[in-house]
Image 1 (tube, one colour):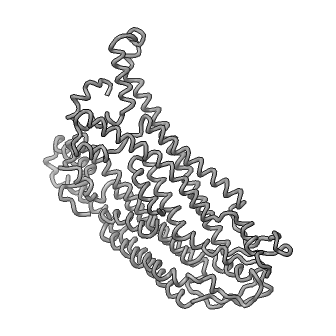
Image 2 (cartoon, helix red, strand yellow):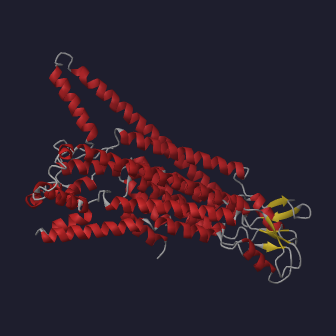
Image 3 (cartoon, helix red, strand yellow):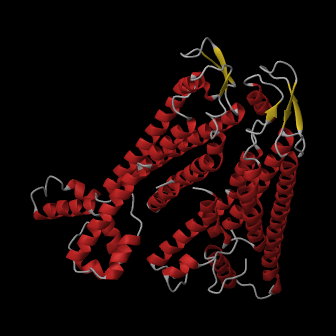
Length: 279
Length: 262
């Protein structure tokens, strides 16, 4: 399992994302993971072997390196990228669950032929209902992880700049020794680059959040304007069988918003779907 | 995620490129990325280990290396290649968006677009017209800009494209001016000049592609402007309306069933 494996797993999620989500995924893979693998790892490759302290005291070098670099930038970025990309798997799991439910419904309604089953697997899920909430949570978690890691970075390496020289007096160094870091300028350049791409990803996530919320509100506004005739009769028909049928229909709609799509696309299923008047 | 994955991603864009675009992509992958991976990385592999300064002062070598090489050639080329190949993804996204729209129309049973099969939409190649033309042209423009910026950055940082054998350094903690020797300077110069030459070829290809697209655009426009002039006496409202409708249909529905020209 390496970055390529992660790419395989996440490109499946891509299909059910919004447009902004796809852009975010491209930025993550091309400008962060790829830059990490092809460039940044070689910059930090010799960070310990070329960390030189002005002393002959054995152990001083190791202790000072450990003191100033509790965790290497590269490992921190790798952890950040893994944690930031993982919430998308929540969405993937939810989509898989919904597809499983759809397949079960197909079997129950007697349309379990391979063609319909394939279509369940291939069609794109609408981000509505419970999937919307899962998607929102995944975006929120992404944001939180990004922010947390940027804060950790700032705490560990204040100013995001890599200095050339650090003064170290940890035991067993005899007194304050000068220690020199390898390639500090190149490391600063890549740190700033990764910071900028991280900020771009945060902005994209926030934009996606706003977009999803606005879309949900717009959709809710449409739903409210449609059954306006039923509103007036809410109290009058509360106990009527029509009202009960409407409630049942609404419950069915909420649970299977994607089944609705399927019915629209497959007229053959319509005669079964006609029982569900809210669909 | 490495160069191979980038090749997979960009290979898909190839289908919707012009011929010059396909040549550019080939030059990029074979003469730049492949050379970087199989040759240049080895040449620069020991750049810091074999960077030797004439002093025993600890830290002097690190500081001098950092002073003369703020960012290594290899990393600069890697970044340049990533930035230069990424605008092609704009085109890929636009094509994917168009495909998605066509599929939606197909599913709705729209009569405007005639496809036998949803598979045909998936494998169909789009003509570079309309909004796709603008996306494609913008992507070429960005490529040019990135190439130029990185070549300038190179020239600015390394004072020309030659790698000297000896550098004189007096940054602290070096006790005074010390001589520092770069490893494999001639080989590095050869590869630097090679990469610059290929970069220039890519710039020329991009400029040529831009000119080609602009020429095609103006040609198409003049053809359209020229057509209604052929029947000045037969213009009536219905024919004009039908022509307008046909144009709108051909604009939005980019494929003729055979559609192979670009």
